[in-house]
Length: 224
Image (cartoon, rainbow, N blue to C red; front, side, top):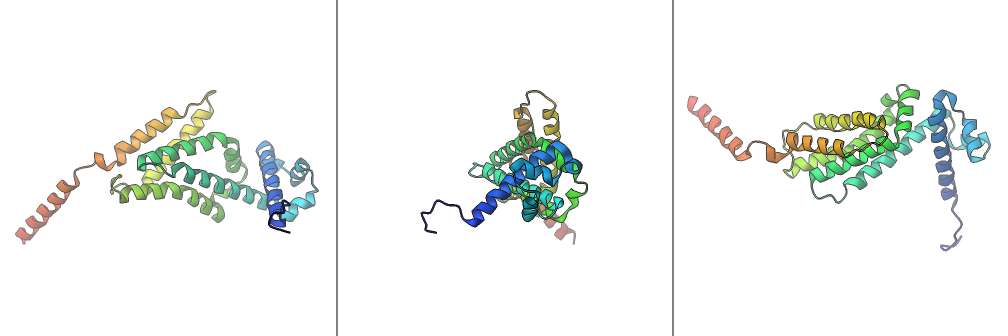
């Protein structure tokens, strides 16, 4: 096959078939739940024999795992794209918050399905690894902000992470109950809260802190 040959390679055909299977599986699992969905339903949806599905995914659980992997990898790419090129830490945090809230609203049926129909999946080692890859975008943004002096060095990463995602996910649930959800107030409130809590500009003057430390050191030496 020449370089200009328009025909897809075997690998491309396999990847295309996998995408078709996973897209159909997601729709069916969202509609019917884990127990109600059958591999045969997925096969029917894309017009292939049931055995074809098993060629790509040997078990129903393997199909679910692949759906989760595709989902987490996709939203991680979205998150990284959202923060790329932003001017400062708070701009990146705002962009990340917008991206996360949008994906929560857009993927709500899938998120609810994964929590409801796959008990214990959140404790699965593979799923934890995928989730860590996603939240690493926040972790890197927060750590970079501290390194550049835009965020206070005293800020606890895990506290900030829980505050960030906890607020967004809770707000996402509320917005889904509204007929015309507007995420803008949520984003502004969260961003303002982070500025108040973590901005280095809102902390005590570091020079004063250093001077106080040196003073205490001299007092201790004098006491000795």
